[in-house]
Structure formats: C-alpha cells, structure tokens
Length: 89
Image (cartoon, rainbow, N blue to C red; front, side, top):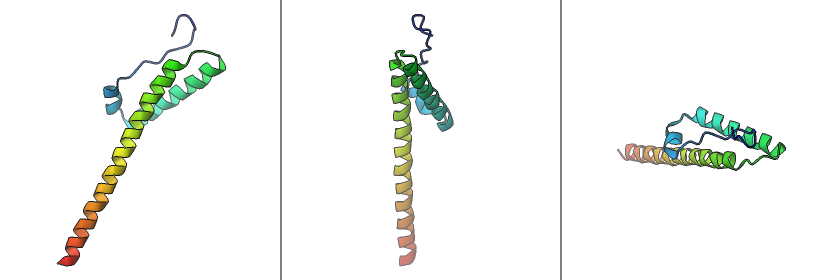
C-alpha cells in the first residue's frame, strides 16, 4: 500500500515473469488491475501504476493471441500441402 494514499500499489511483474504465467493467471491479474483502476478512479487516487501493469498484461495477451493465430495459419498451410501431395499420388 502507498502510505500516503491508503491505496494499494500493484506488485509489478517483469515481462519474463508474465511470459511464463498461465493464461488463466494472466486473466486474473488483468481483472484485478481493472478493478483497482476503477476503484482508484472512484476514490480519486492515482492509478498510473495499475494502468502500467495492465498495459504489460494486455501486451502479453496480445503476443500470445498473435502467436496462436500465426501457428494456426501455419498448421492450415501444412495440412493443405499434405492434402495436395496426397491427391497427386
């Protein structure tokens, strides 16, 4: 807690720590950050540290989603190549 505001500050996660967290854990942290930001705004507290933490969480989720999409696309291309080769035989 910030001793001057009686409003908690987040425990910052490094990008390396975020990279190894389970998706569900990331979602839980995201939810907590959003709740603290809303609560802080209602109490007119400084929520900058929560907003920064949320940005890191959202970026990690974006990276994972993009990676999953690219991998799915690659799998589909591999499947197409295999089916094309099989139909040529």
